[in-house]
Image (tube, rainbow, N blue to C red):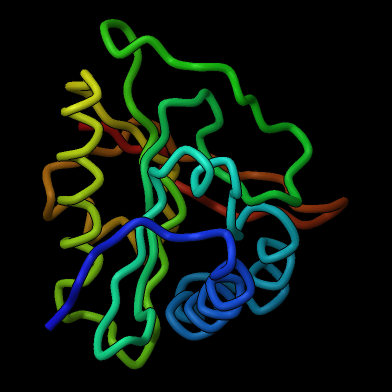
Length: 174
């Protein structure tokens, strides 16, 4: 049985390890190893602001974290703590879309509905906060899940990781 709950700061090392495992295994058909490793240095990772806001969730099964993801009322669309250009300013639920952020599933638990369960929890919490629209910067492996959940592609983005290296994402909305 999967249990969804807010993440805690003490879980950050476990979440970082989960994110790395997930990115390296579940993204290997869509990205090169150089893109994955580059993204793990900033584009992928834990954003402690989400944990502090109580909007980052973990999925647990038998006491083990098997997935994570969150939503945000802040302007930053994606990226972990290592990303320097984050914007912590608040969004206006009447005008702006809540940001769906940092979804990663343990490869051993992939394709069992965990991502969808976390997404449902995020959308429900964001609606309770007053948001009725959502947007995200989806990884290529995540696009299929988000499309099944009603999200549409808004823009294809090549995000620079370092000189000479970028990674494709898809900005999506609902």
